[in-house]
Image 1 (tube, one colour):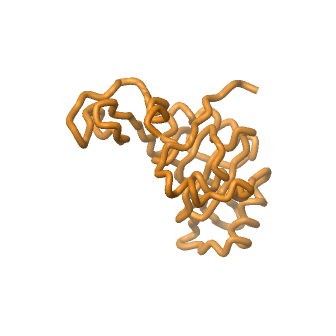
Image 2: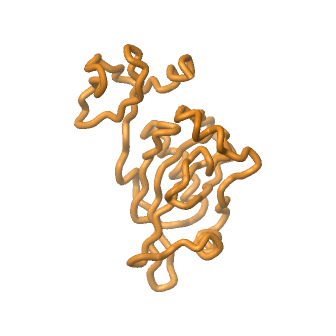
Length: 177
């Protein structure tokens, strides 16, 4: 299998401290597992839709948790290959993905993590978008040590106005954790 970038948790320490390392969300190995997870976790289907927190673990498996849970909890505190939110539609007995993002401020995965997401979803044979429906860029400000979400391609720190790297640099946060 192709080597993919692994992302470590860079969110608040208080959240990481509450994570059970023995836990990992619900591993999805076939489409039917999604429906089983919805039922077992008492998810509410509203307008034929369920939104979930997802990670792709380092074994390249889709893992789901309730939308209100943290990505680091879904991952059991371990590194991930991607993370974000995923929207499942349930219509006429079929399930498909209508929206998917890399929105995870705990792991800050690159939009290019789509490659592994797409690979995993194709293995599951589930219909899904051709790319993240919302792709987020994250940058670390070395000046004030803050995490930034890039908006409108403006690479300027929202806290101190310093210029931000044009390339993903969230790995530098580990120097300050």
